[in-house]
Structures are given as structure tokens and as C-alpha cells.
Amino acid sequence: MILETTMNPRRRLLLAAAGSLLIVRPAAAQMTIAGQTFPATMRVGGADLLLNGVGTRSVAWIDGYAAALYLSRRASTVPQVLATPGAKRIQLRMLQTAPAKEFVKAIDKGFRRNTPQAEQPALAQRQAAFDAQVMAAGQVKKGDVVNLDYLPGRGLVFSMNGKPGGADLPGEDLYAAVLRIFLGVRPVDERLKAGLLGQPPR
Image 1: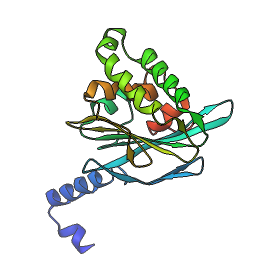
Image 2: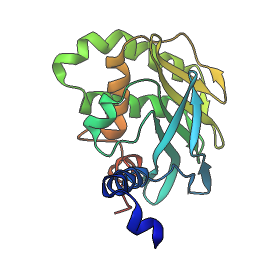
Image 3: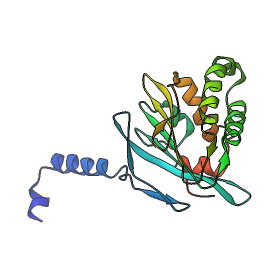
């Protein structure tokens, strides 16, 4: 009580304001979904990224994969995600085995549905190169871990189980198109989109 009555009122206000700033954003926490636990942070391209959200891609009540989005700062809307600077990562953990060609079909469908038509010609060659990298895997097996990374100065970096899938594919526009597969107006899965944006399950 002595401190409370003798402290300079201005100092009390400054301390109160500082305290409120400390609790604006809770610390990142790991998340578990479909038996997969994603850590609170990941080191990507020399940067520590925060777990933004997780979700599953489901078809007819079967979970195909669990996914997580990592960013340099948290985002709750698609424009915020696209505007977030620095490295980014979408990590997919496969819960079923499927031919790589089925994965490529989903990628191409996502591009067509969510990339403005005027932007598609400029992306076509790099999209085809990305498709080729995925096809080279032959099969995406249960337990595989796929990383779709954006690294400043390098572009899209595809890897599976920690091994690079091919050459870097340059352009922030290409990675934005990849993000829209999961987060666009017609995403691959609406519940997955909500989860990656950190929204509660519907």
C-alpha cells in the first residue's frame, strides 16, 4: 500500500501500460491434431517462425493429411498472411498413402480456382516445374513430411522428409498462389483453411 500511495501517478500509468502490452498476444504453443503434434516454433531459412494454426484435409470423413502454417508473426486473415514478411512454411504430414499424381491434381485444381486468371500465364512455367518435382516423388506415403517453404531471395522450396525435391522456384507470386490453394476463396478444404488461420473448428 505504501508503494501504491507514494508512487508518482505518471509512473503508475506507464507501468500499467507496459503491463497491458505484455499480455496483448499469448506465447505460441504447440498444437496437436489427428495425432500429429506441431511445435510452437520452427527454424526456417535462418528465421524462427511461429505456429499460426493447424488443420486436416478430409474427404468422406477420412483425414488425408494434417497441416500447419508457420509465419514470422501471427495472422488471422488471408491478406495478413500474404503480407507477412520473411520466410513462411506450410508443413503437411501425410496420414494416408496416395500416388503423387493425385497430389499434383489437387495442386493444379487449387491454382486454377484461386489464382486470378490474368496472373496464371506468368505462373504457368513455374507451376509446371513444381508439378514435376512432386511427380518425381512417385508416391506420397503415410508418415511422409512435406514442407512447402518460402525463402526470401530463393522462392518456393519443396522438400520431403528433409530432402530437397529440386531446384528453388523463384517468385513471391508463386508462393502466394501456393498459399491460396489452402487459403483462397475456394480452398482445398474450408475447415483446413479455418484451422490454418487459427480459427476455432466449425
